[in-house]
Figure 1 (cartoon, rainbow, N blue to C red):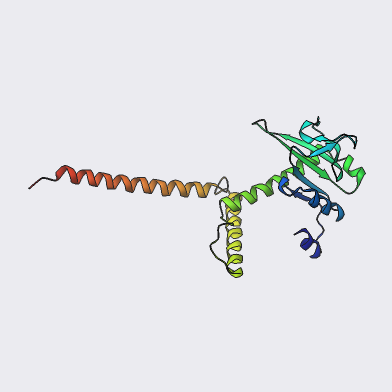
Figure 2: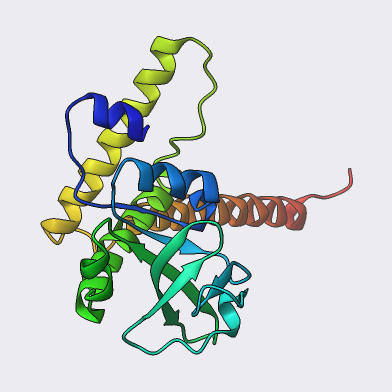
Length: 206
């Protein structure tokens, strides 16, 4: 996909992705294209501060401002750690072709880019869970493209509703619809039960 983007003539300022795509092959491809990136990495990825003694990134003492390390079989990157309330940690690395710029990456720059990165992750999650972009029962290319377009159009409408403060978040419509369907089902079921009970009370044996 990056190759296609470059063929279009676009020049990405930086690429961001999650740990799923942070293989050595992918990172080297970005490096060879002279593209900077921010990506999540698994906690067991091997890094070294001195370029010789490699340990898992989870065992590094990483200051809040980040740490310059050698990523095994790649080269120098700056690693950051994000802490979450459930005590889980996530690790991210940043790379830019200019070594001086790499060393000078600040926490503020990381947070700004991570915010964009997180927004993209939320978009992907919502377009799958709320708009059902993966759930298509068609086979032809034209029908699949129509489904993809419809899912993206649905998300666009949800985002417009959120911006206009008609909803608080993308999941609200889905949640309210589910509650409405569940409510109608329960009421209909109760109505049937009441009807059956009333009928049984007034039935007599001839």
